[in-house]
Length: 279
Image (tube, rainbow, N blue to C red; front, side, top):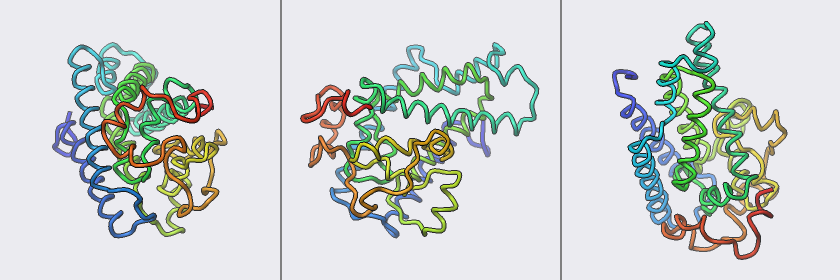
């Protein structure tokens, strides 16, 4: 499978690297918030977690775990899934696939906040005390493996083309890099974009230390699900400059270090239980 003459893996890595580079430059030129912690230290940690994620996925696919793209190819071969059994124009099939899979990712994200054992994993992402494009890659490897299984199961049921899955993953990964970026957009641009897509200002609310705000704005790609399910909050209570990023129970230098972050799921919060936080 190729895209613009590139293999699937080169296309996915290339799109990620290009979007990350653009966001990193934009953060340097047009920052929204002042950094609290060393970017070098945080980026080292966050990219270290990303590398660990790649190793985990490689090992588990080597021993038989199916990725979402692999699941799509298998579903097509077996003629499993809704879209493999109805006749639609290619453009409509791909559009349905992208929208439905985006909803699946939204629902999975909600689950990681509501189910205590999943919150233990997901709090690695939320423990970052600055938010920028590198936060988008800060997910514990066990959560990444869980996400792969969720997407693969959804693909087997839906039956999208493998190409549509590749495009979706490039879209959602690029969207995550964009909406985690510490970028100041003109208010008019933010207003137009967030009518359909998740913007940095919209997603930053989700990284607030205030529980009510953390439990809002779950979208990564499309903003429509939070509006439909009434989990949308337009602006943070204390404003973007005054809000605290991260988790109240873990503030300080610890979250910026790789050993601290990778071991976080196996430690209990000092002040509040997972059951209290995951509500």
